[in-house]
Image (cartoon, rainbow, N blue to C red; front, side, top):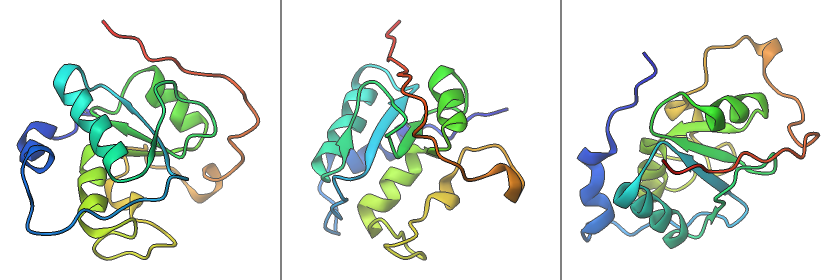
Length: 142
């Protein structure tokens, strides 16, 4: 049904000291978020900035990732079209703990596939250059 497990169960990660150091991410990672509101959205944005990645309020083709609360909406659809990494909030929590490569990956390839919210596609459907369009998807608060 496109639902992602609630980030609420992981909020202690955002607000309490952890027994492991936060792993810093490259500022070349350009992250946008969708589906989070109020304090939850603020907490996710603060986490992104705290670990060194770039946060963009308005998603553009040059973004690298979209972190979704649910696999739906205008930003989600555009991120799929632009072939961005579309991941759950669990991806952010995982890379903050284990680094960009994740627990089982490498720093070069990342671990997005473990937390992907992309619909299943064939190899021929993936890839391509999402840089061609200069369209912007703006954040809308309700």
